[in-house]
Image (cartoon, rainbow, N blue to C red):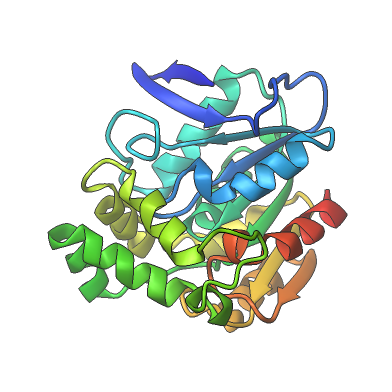
Length: 262
């Protein structure tokens, strides 16, 4: 579906189903740096066909949305709140991956009345980004994407061993990230690197939470995911065999954890 928000055309996936926030629990998926709705394809389709009202917007400058990418995590959280209000969503279950988890922290702490539950996947209280990667994203985006795909996947991703036959983790991820507006990845990484309010935001989150931690994650290592869960409380699920891109690398394990939490 498409809508206009702040004079910018925004695309949001509904998992292939009609979206009606009054007819069932709403699940709002929040994508990470350089990502789009396509990263959550195997989650929003799964839950959209099981009675949930799923919505996965592309932030400005990402995927099929127009406009310029936002430049701070705080602004992104405000944008998601505005998006919910524009669609008449009174309350939603949030699912955030990577930088999406940082956005989710801010959204749940700033707008608690909008959040029923919050699931944090492969994320942390803060996600510092290497200066070399930030510079590479500014000067040679395709090489930066390749580096992130290499670093972001675990063993299965590197041998293209996918739980969905006929697809490749790393090739799929590379094409997905290349579909954003030029410069978007750099802006995302700068915003991610600059975010420091995680501990304060986590302390303010009052809704039920789930933290999914991955054993082969090199972008948000296991210890940082465990620190997030300790700050939030709530439920914890570990996927020992997955790298950072768990939502595409091990979607069945992620969906199983989410379904039990919902």
